[in-house]
Image 1 (cartoon, helix red, strand yellow):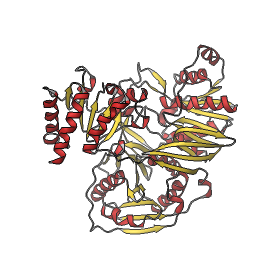
Image 2 (tube, each protein chain N blue to C red):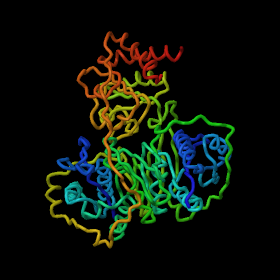
Image 3 (cartoon, rainbow over the protein chains, first blue to last red):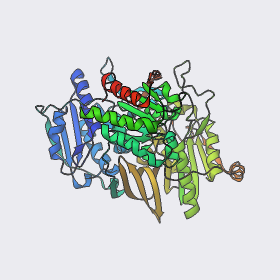
Length: 329
Length: 255
């Protein structure tokens, strides 16, 4: 009998990704209902100290695989190790964050295990038979597919910001197991030569609670500084529409929409964005949408919770000042 | 150098999604395009051929309309096409489709396999990586730069907040991210030539596959609850900004 919900925890420089904590929190809730256990698996180098945090965040068991070859993520080494761990542990479900690493690792691992995978899910529930079912956006959020599987483990990657993080309980204890990294030589064919992570004081777009985004109405790359000023007051990420990216004002990594990133922040502030169907697909599941646009007929107003018709170059700096007042209160 | 490009025909990004009487996604009257990310893969394949020589084979799975997508890729400059077209594909999931594709690709000489990093319809982003696993070869996801020398490639891939540089030996799979290149439009001459290029059609039986073994089942489809237009905040800019900040704090409670 397969047992437990396994979370593949993602960490960089001993920082656990927020999405991993979101998954632990939600898995804990489900496990409490079904009587399952929550197993956190963490890979890396010099990561022993993460175990108590994972226990406090909801894990009953923490499996630590500490090896120099796992210091940085690589498809081959991580697949090799996790394939063996999963076969040994036989969990009911294996969950990963739908991050760059999660998206790369999960399909490979699923194929090796001979199981299905629900990618980029925005919902997870248990049905009357305690079966996990997943909800995932298709057509970039224009529709949803609801999936399940009889094959164990059921695997899924979950979109960041889908579940809230439960505050850690330092009194929680977990069984900590150290496993040896058993990596097949055949899995070490791709060699990671270099990792360049740009230092940014702003949160990652897909994980941000608040996003300030600019479109064609920004008129040029130099004007994004007013959005950045606004973003920095409230700890937001900065995004862009396809129109702005195609004009060369912002790099593609900032693009929100059907051919960019799909985001689901608590608050999305759209500045000078008309609201094309492809853009709405990428941000339509935001909890609150604010639109600032000089065109009163802009489609973005049809989905915005709050809208201001006006000149963004006038309104955004005023809003920055208002937010400063709020933050200083 | 032998290059295989895996492409998918998808709905136009403008398409509105409706469900048919049986609760499935209705494809009637929808304009079909090559998945935008696959266009980068096709372009990269053609550029590699132009630089290093060799042949580009485009492989796709889908209904008979998917022929148009393969022809377009041939018109851009690919040399051959293979289309797996079978009603049985309806009853396959990513696991099965990767196995089918692996069988097709195993019969085509390949040093480099290219595909888009994601298809904009199901957004699953699985098949190319699963294909690499099924063929027991390495893969690099979300590539924005690809440099080839001899039997090796150095790929720059996008990760959250940065990039990685990865070196692999052939054969290998690469998935294309926007930014890799600027795909060409097919020329009139290209379109004429494409009509004479070989396009092989295969059924699942041709490939030795029988009834599907589903690892994942879609129980149902649903449509999102449409968002409603909220409140327009009127007044002078300063007044409107102040009102908005107040609403975000007191009503939405997000600040």
